[in-house]
Image 1: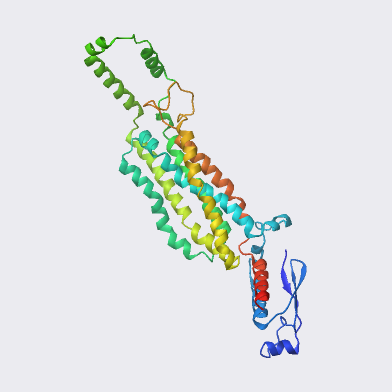
Image 2: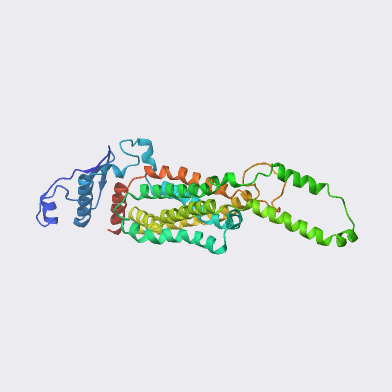
Length: 364
């Protein structure tokens, strides 16, 4: 375990600078401290700066979770991870997380038409599902923001990102629970229908006009048959919608702490002159998330929902895109990228102290 210690002598001049109070943290004109096993000397040092260092030292010595200033988890804090204890590594890691989560938020917008067709949903029902994201966000954002300075922010953000991934996987259950209700395009009924259409004799324009009535009724019957095959029972439809709605509520809950927690963590561990720079970088990277979501949405829309080979094209009325595949990809990616964030420290005390001292020296 590494500690930051300050071994300072008490002199008459030091007592005068501290209003006559003996404090082992004051010296005549220099202060020598041991930080991470390295001896550091800071000069010049006035009463205000010494008091700040003494206060920081007291916090380190009395803090029960002193290990939270080092990278790792529990008793596993290898030295190789300590090189990642800086805001550059944290910003890079969270930028990837922001990219994945922003893509997941937008992805459902690219698949809403397929969802309406698959589950025979009305526009009002699909609008309700989209609003479930905001319901989860508004229900928790005030509560979680209040505890921004009382929690382990990196681990809280990691858990929220994992919850993001779980919410996406939960949405895929709407497909797996109704998978048996979907028709297979390799069935004899579909194959026979395609073969019969291919064997129809060619007719001229006059014959089409003569058989207009019979042809219209035949097409109407075929369309009704196709429509009934794609319809789900009310029971399975309700189950599927509940899965998607619950997933969207969890997604909104998971995104509620992001802005408050990330702003607090960056501001507490960086000079104020650099806070906006790092926040801007993380926000800028996440902007590309919607582009990735729509690109992946276009790819999965050209894959049949059951992932099997078919003889029909995406323009066929019976076509359903594999909307659930994108949720599975983004959900799995969210869970994976959230794991490294667990190992970041709760506070970067030593780095913050050195930054304050350097800034004070420049002012002096």
